[in-house]
Length: 287
Ligand code: SAM
Image (cartoon, rainbow, N blue to C red):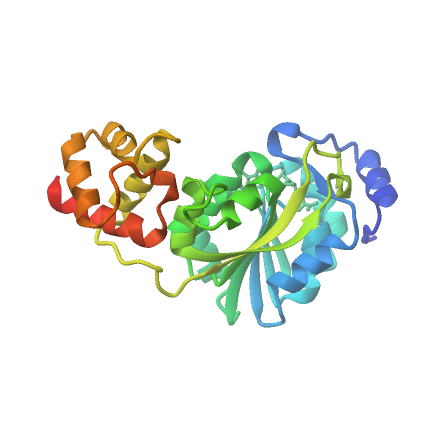
């Protein structure tokens, strides 16, 4: 018999009967508010979409994605969820579950092998909090043929990711993600929507991958190093922060800043994408 979990009591009772024990170390907070998964699925998929889901858990979001999308591939690290997912997703013909660590998975191969008949590919997940940044960075940096990434992350992470580059709330991740994607907060999800209840609230956000980066740089790796360097010593001048992080003498950094019309007292975390890109090119030509 297939179980269609639709409310907290049903999910709690089913997981209890299966003897499932939540693992905090795997970020296992399962969605029990039945209004959230359909909204995420509607944002991530239509009937032409192939969706990669990361961490299906008990399969609540997976079921909704399976209804909304053409095909779903869900990647779950916890083998203990195998019998549970067989019971909750066994009737969904367009879903396949792969038991693996997403960070060690060749997603390009999965897309080619399992989703090649889909017009567009998206990623959708209620992300395990302990790997929010590594997962997002993997998805972006591997330059996969993915159109958008709709993910639930901690509210604070959402605010940082969706901040304006150069604003007070921005961080390294804001600038790096912005290079690859446009970011948009979708909706707030209170901590009470999960079992067990986490300490913090969450938010669903969408990253829409850019066809072309917003700035042009010759050396992406060095660009990311410069971004890191700008944020290394927060509240210090960019000259100090960059010089110490990149091991470049202060005179060289000063000259580079002067050439792009930036005051030598400016702080690196206030730079917008264009300034970061110009600075990268200036530094590259000098070191
Ligand atoms: N999607 C389910 C939901 O919304 O109820 C579960 C979300 S729960 C926050 C995160 C899920 O990711 C868990 O099922 C956990 O076992 C899984 N997970 C954790 N680390 C993982 C990894 N490295 N690769 C794949 N799945 C992982």
